[in-house]
Amino acid sequence: MAIHQQLLNEFQRDFPLSPSPYADIALQLGVTEDEVLIALGKLVENQSISRIGAIVPPNSIGVSLLAAMAVPAEQLDEIAEWVSSLPEVNHNYEREHRFNLWFVVNASHDGHMEDVLGHIQQRTGLAILRLPLLEEFHIDLGFPLEFIGAT
Amino acid sequence: MSALPFDPWFTDPRDLALFEALQEGLPLVSRPYAAMGERVGYTEAEVIGRLREWRASGLIKRLGVIVRHRRLGYRANAMVVWDVPDAEVSRVAGRICQYSFVTLCYRRPRRGSEWHYNLFCMIHGQDRERVESQVRQLIEGCEMTAWPTATLFSTRCFKQRGARYVPAPGTILPKPIQAL
Image 1 (cartoon, one colour):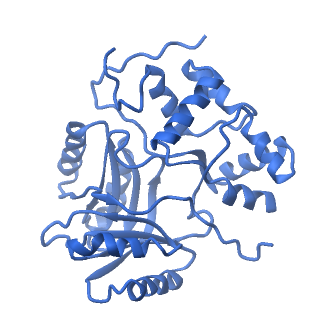
Image 2: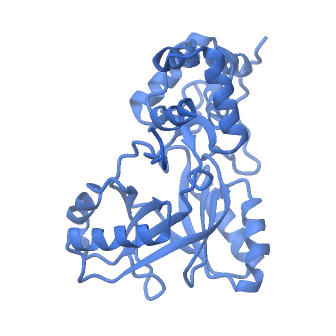
Image 3: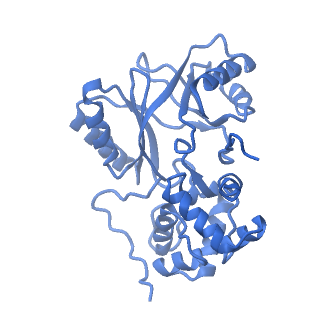
């Protein structure tokens, strides 16, 4: 278990950019490369991690927008599922508010963004609250996990 | 040379394919960068070189294990918003970011009578009561008691994945060189 917790917590940033990164991690943890690969495979399989990859700042690859809609409760499941099916949408959450559906749209340029938003408004008949990022204050250093009963 | 999308990050047609492979996740094999390179037509050293450049130039903010907090028991995910006078936003945001339980903090526009909040932060916690007490701690600690606020807990996650480059319909992209 300990190796899984260390993999989750200690390698969220500065992942080794060397030819054999998993062997480097294994060396740090005092285990074999195979053990690291098996443990990571397990964590992906049980969906504790989504991937080993990159966090990219908003608006660096194309344009992105946080959007919200006030969806009538009886339509929420259907509309949420349809919004999630759009390739340009990468996050989609229900929140407790009059604006109950919150999603992030990623498009290649402003015209593409307008097309996607127009399509969503037309298809759902609902207005979209547009909340683009104006300023980012936090530096993302990863997500510190606390393990209950961890040693 | 014709301009590629997202110049200056992408200077070679293969960069788009490499970025796409990166957003899918590093393969779990002994030489992941070599495997990605084979897919997109770069050598292992070139892949490592491109990723180093992207990390140094800020396209990659963080490279590593991306956790799914909900699956790990962090189910109380709150978006906390405030209506802060414009002149105070930067100062207050600086104080909010001092709290380790705050994972993101942004300024966004107000939208008339529909939405009057301009400062956003995210808190991911294991239970709702604890997140609520963290919100109170923030409001008092950052002297924000005078400003309107709302806490929007998420109740369901329908989709969560890394940002992809999705070309607009009809876009013709430069073809990457086919790997042998």
